[in-house]
Length: 133
Ligand SMILES: [Zn+2]
Image (cartoon, rainbow, N blue to C red; front, side, top):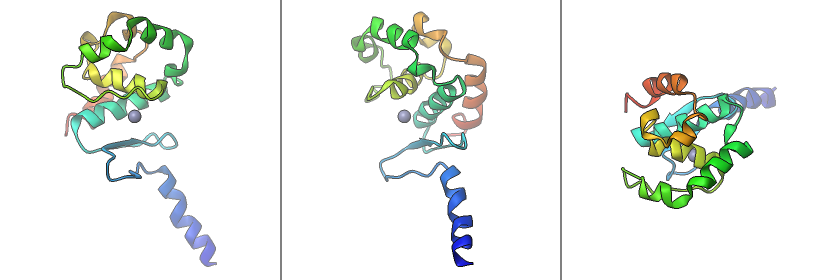
């Protein structure tokens, strides 16, 4: 009987966006789609992950990866208006970071990458998560 109670308590925790380290400033839970973030830039980054997920992980498509590679890493370090510490540790992180570097605004993103982001959905999600921070 107690095991069932434990399971009932633990299962919902998998669906919450809970940071696993005190260094984390944002989390996107891929199971539930929920976001937790501590400040505006972190919120924009996590919205980037959610956009990627909702688009079927477009960051993993060869088309997206080729478009990023064509610009080169230097492009993103030179076009980094907020002095953000850029981490392109994998394609999904690159997708969210590039979205963050554009501050979630279509006009700030390089034209060759704009097609990979759903800008209507982006503005709805930023309204919900980032604008209150
Ligand atoms: Zn991330």
